[in-house]
Amino acid sequence: MNVEPFSDHYSWTLCTRTSRSSVVLPLPVRHPLRKLGRDIRDARWRRRIPAAIAAERASISRTTLVKIEKGDPGVAIGIYATVLFVLGMADRLGDLAAPKNDPVGLQLEEENLPQRIRVARSPKRTKDK
Image: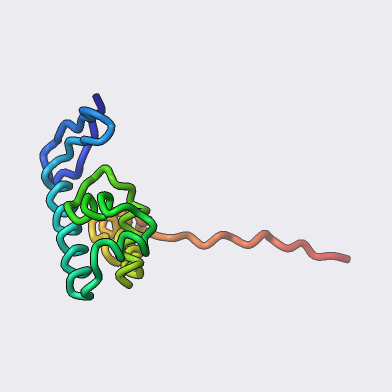
């Protein structure tokens, strides 16, 4: 049994793996994954791309695409990224944890900045004859 700590924003949650394919995740993780899955499905529908074609372009099975569209946490993040690429949406993946989207990290970094910065002294020069 693995115990995973989470941010102070959420209560501590016990994460266990009941089998290889079923992972019990905390609600603050499950809900965004399900939303991502729905959003991927909706984006595919808006583009009028059939599931079979989207799966073929991503080199995955239709079953895996269905899992992605349900927000299954057992599907590798690389497969999610590939499906987003097929939909023309992969460019935003790099910004998920970018500093501009991490106010907590920026605040912590700011708190750890030194109060003052000292300029290094230059070594004394000796006069040559």
